[in-house]
Image 1: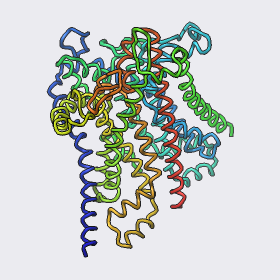
Image 2: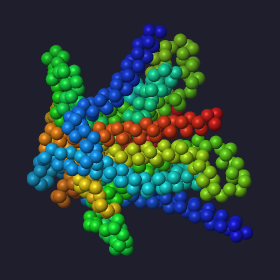
Image 3: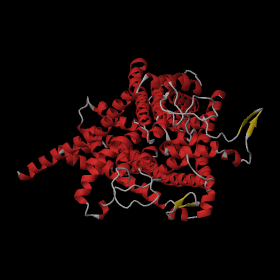
Image 4: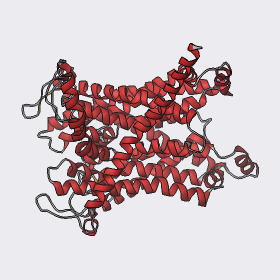
Length: 298
Length: 303
């Protein structure tokens, strides 16, 4: 009889430990969100949202140019990263039988786990410093009158770094959502004489559109908060966007530089920037998930 | 059909381009830091002096710092993740499951700079006043716990890293738990096993996948730059006690890159990146192979 009650005690202890572990994990989440919301709201103002940052030493200023920078960087990154990720995802799902597919899948999964800062250094070395041109013994590459050499710290380099981060995320989730397309539908299309690439674009992609959109949003929300690769490629700026080959500011960079600065007003701005970043990510993550489920679900 | 051929060629071209990029990454990081390895040789990773002005670079303390912070992170995160994974998969009521699991996923959605900001301005002062100082008062007779307590350093970094890798380990463990054939679970339950006995059996069944998850969590923690850079304290030497400051491989890149003093300093930071790349690559490949093998094995059993 004693054995039995001991067992019950162990069981109760085990279940409570499981619950406690979950609650413990929720404490930092709640703590971060509460701090960001409280400190962010108290620092937020209209001026902060419409003014650009002031150069160091001049008090005041806003974070609007960082918001603009993040939107531009993420947008540019999507232009490169999403199509490439989509094509890789299509290859992995629709051409599973191809002998290259397992290798590509392996590289995608390994690349997805690479530390973001390694990708930042990579882009710094090949583009910002221009080693990729030196690899071929050139200073710059000219097509017509248009020359590309070492870019220096530039928005375009940051966008490419973010695009590289985006590609494996998009590829993996596109593959997963295309795998959910029933084989019978594809076979029906093919048996009616539709060519394979048309069936991919017309049948599979349109069937899996909500999954693909979610893949894109997931990747967006992941790269929007990345600071490490941007630090090495765009370096940050106090001014509005001036061109693809100029330095540019971004919200995560502002959070980093303002957060470690000794000035209280800059720290307050870092909290405001965090609030905006987290709100954007939460809206992307949760809001669109709900909308997509309602509007595009089959 | 002709269109199909063209489409397939485009796909293969993009795939090869992607694989080429991965190889290019390793190659360019190596070439970019070649003169560092030529100047210092193996001493680059074995010595501990880091003096940009004199042009002497050794990263042994950084490697040690990286391993020790990741070890702290794993010690905290692994048990928690296993319990949480079991809780979410087996103990949570069906209706609550999606909400609870998206809460855990939210932990992964918080950007690492925001973790850093929170840890720098909120968590570190809190831990210093409410945990570290009382702990030192109680255990100060042990050398390991003696020394200045600033709140910043390897222990705080390890704690923050543990929060950041928790969702990774949890989700891989959950995936593996979901692949355990149900007849195994049913068999032990029908023999009158209690929850903790079922859990023990399931974890034994997926132990390889758990090892894979741990290695992957380690790789994540190892490569984390921003949050650690903000709270590690930045000391170019071995941490001497548990509250001491230190440095890790990614965080030194973040902190020194914008103010590097000479080309060799830049190259040394790139070399740090190359070392980081090699260690991360080894971890990721091993973890992925283990996870592949176990999940394929288990999927085979189910089918």
